[in-house]
Image (cartoon, rainbow, N blue to C red; front, top):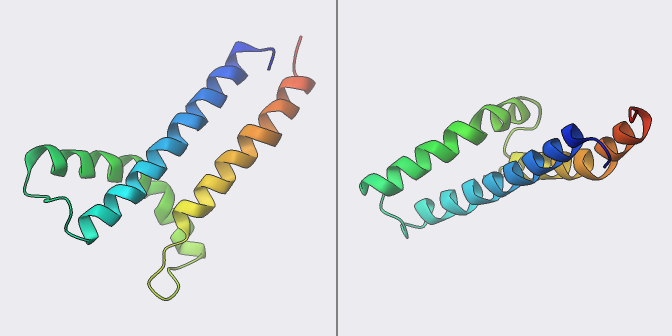
Length: 98
Protein backbone atom coordinates (compact mmCIF):
# COMPACT_ATOMS: atom_id res chain seq x y z
CA UNK A 1 0.00 0.00 0.00
CA UNK A 2 1.63 3.19 -1.11
CA UNK A 3 0.04 5.67 1.25
CA UNK A 4 0.99 5.71 4.94
CA UNK A 5 -2.65 6.27 5.89
CA UNK A 6 -3.70 2.97 4.33
CA UNK A 7 -0.77 1.20 5.96
CA UNK A 8 -1.79 2.62 9.33
CA UNK A 9 -5.39 1.52 8.76
CA UNK A 10 -4.20 -1.98 7.86
CA UNK A 11 -2.17 -2.16 11.08
CA UNK A 12 -5.11 -0.90 13.15
CA UNK A 13 -7.42 -3.46 11.60
CA UNK A 14 -4.91 -6.22 12.34
CA UNK A 15 -4.59 -5.01 15.93
CA UNK A 16 -8.38 -4.94 16.35
CA UNK A 17 -8.66 -8.47 14.99
CA UNK A 18 -6.28 -9.59 17.74
CA UNK A 19 -8.41 -7.72 20.29
CA UNK A 20 -11.50 -9.57 19.04
CA UNK A 21 -9.71 -12.92 19.30
CA UNK A 22 -8.50 -12.06 22.82
CA UNK A 23 -12.04 -11.08 23.85
CA UNK A 24 -13.43 -14.38 22.59
CA UNK A 25 -10.75 -16.43 24.34
CA UNK A 26 -11.18 -14.42 27.54
CA UNK A 27 -14.95 -14.92 27.48
CA UNK A 28 -14.42 -18.68 27.13
CA UNK A 29 -11.95 -18.71 30.02
CA UNK A 30 -14.38 -16.79 32.22
CA UNK A 31 -17.31 -19.01 31.21
CA UNK A 32 -15.39 -22.19 32.06
CA UNK A 33 -14.14 -20.71 35.37
CA UNK A 34 -10.50 -20.84 34.35
CA UNK A 35 -10.09 -17.15 35.13
CA UNK A 36 -11.46 -15.73 38.34
CA UNK A 37 -13.01 -12.31 37.71
CA UNK A 38 -12.61 -11.43 41.40
CA UNK A 39 -8.95 -10.92 40.58
CA UNK A 40 -8.46 -7.20 39.91
CA UNK A 41 -6.23 -7.61 36.89
CA UNK A 42 -8.49 -10.23 35.29
CA UNK A 43 -11.58 -8.10 35.88
CA UNK A 44 -9.84 -5.05 34.44
CA UNK A 45 -8.76 -7.01 31.37
CA UNK A 46 -12.28 -8.40 30.82
CA UNK A 47 -13.80 -4.92 31.15
CA UNK A 48 -11.26 -3.42 28.74
CA UNK A 49 -11.85 -6.10 26.12
CA UNK A 50 -15.63 -5.74 26.54
CA UNK A 51 -15.39 -1.98 26.15
CA UNK A 52 -13.40 -2.38 22.93
CA UNK A 53 -15.52 -5.09 21.32
CA UNK A 54 -19.04 -5.03 22.74
CA UNK A 55 -20.32 -1.92 20.88
CA UNK A 56 -19.56 -3.55 17.53
CA UNK A 57 -20.80 -6.98 18.63
CA UNK A 58 -24.06 -5.42 19.86
CA UNK A 59 -24.72 -3.88 16.43
CA UNK A 60 -24.27 -7.26 14.77
CA UNK A 61 -26.42 -9.03 17.36
CA UNK A 62 -29.28 -6.71 16.42
CA UNK A 63 -29.26 -8.24 12.95
CA UNK A 64 -28.14 -11.79 13.77
CA UNK A 65 -29.05 -12.84 17.33
CA UNK A 66 -27.19 -15.71 19.02
CA UNK A 67 -28.42 -19.01 17.60
CA UNK A 68 -28.67 -21.93 20.00
CA UNK A 69 -26.42 -20.20 22.50
CA UNK A 70 -23.72 -19.52 19.90
CA UNK A 71 -22.78 -15.93 19.24
CA UNK A 72 -21.54 -15.44 15.69
CA UNK A 73 -20.84 -11.71 16.02
CA UNK A 74 -17.06 -12.08 16.65
CA UNK A 75 -16.78 -14.34 13.61
CA UNK A 76 -18.64 -11.81 11.46
CA UNK A 77 -16.45 -8.98 12.75
CA UNK A 78 -13.29 -10.94 11.90
CA UNK A 79 -14.56 -11.72 8.41
CA UNK A 80 -15.39 -8.04 7.87
CA UNK A 81 -11.95 -6.95 9.14
CA UNK A 82 -10.17 -9.43 6.88
CA UNK A 83 -12.29 -8.39 3.88
CA UNK A 84 -11.58 -4.71 4.48
CA UNK A 85 -7.85 -5.32 4.99
CA UNK A 86 -7.42 -7.68 2.03
CA UNK A 87 -9.80 -6.21 -0.56
CA UNK A 88 -11.05 -2.74 0.30
CA UNK A 89 -7.84 -1.05 1.51
CA UNK A 90 -5.70 -2.19 -1.45
CA UNK A 91 -8.44 -1.08 -3.85
CA UNK A 92 -8.65 2.32 -2.15
CA UNK A 93 -4.88 2.65 -2.12
CA UNK A 94 -4.70 1.87 -5.84
CA UNK A 95 -7.44 4.34 -6.74
CA UNK A 96 -6.45 7.20 -4.46
CA UNK A 97 -2.66 7.07 -4.69
CA UNK A 98 -1.14 10.27 -5.93
